[in-house]
Length: 140
Image (cartoon, rainbow, N blue to C red):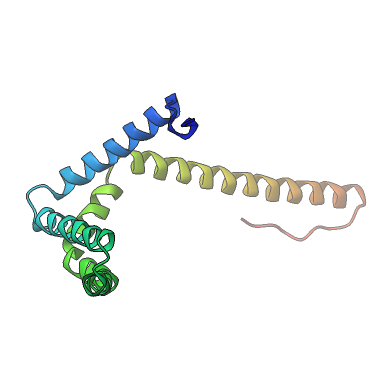
């Protein structure tokens, strides 16, 4: 009858991940004015939901406009916190590991290209030596 309400291990993982992300975000905003503003936004969302449920057209319309232009205002107001959060994310251990792996991969590709180029030069010199023609001098 209510098959869409079944609970599986994937749901547990999803809930755990969402809780961890929300917890880290709240820790990031702790002690800043961003937390106070987030509480205000939650109050506005609840007011919008209340107005929508009870079909309060004017309040729904006005809050819709606030949310439309409020997104830009939030970006401007949270700019220092967003900058700090992105800097913190860039300095995290996971990002250092990712950056090191990308650097290693790029270095390996560069070395492989250089080895292939040198092998091509050696093969060309060997071929010219067998045909008794002079090869141009190769400098690296």
